[in-house]
View 1 (cartoon, rainbow, N blue to C red):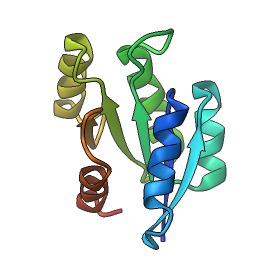
View 2 (view 1 turned 90 degrees about the vertical axis):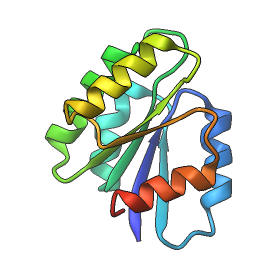
View 3 (view 1 turned 135 degrees about the horizontal axis):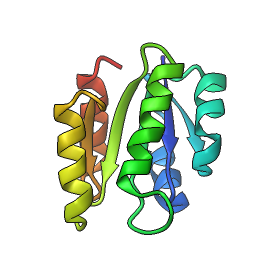
Amino acid sequence: MKNVLLIMHRKILADALTRAMRDDERFQLFTEYDYSNALMTCQCAQAHVAVLEIPESGPWTPMRCFSLGDSLKERCPGLKLMILCPESSGTACIATVQARRQGRIDDFVYYDSSWKYLVSKLEALGV
């Protein structure tokens, strides 16, 4: 079983993903809604992968999220990082594709992706 940390601004989305994936024996899900606690939660959960949502508004801009991701990957060796990107934000989309090309993130999915697609992406990461 692999530990997956959901770092999400939208509680309703995180709860829906948790419910949808609760019977999947391949994953144990942990959720963190307070981005400033993400590093501690990642370490405590011994996460294998973190799914980090870029919020559509608020203080957690794409660049700030990528900086958090850099810290997570630095402090949690072997962690895979997947971004949940708002497809309605051109800035976030461009920054996410660039981060993927630079190797700062391992993969990404858009908000409108199904949870089944997200699971397939997690599997592709070897999680």
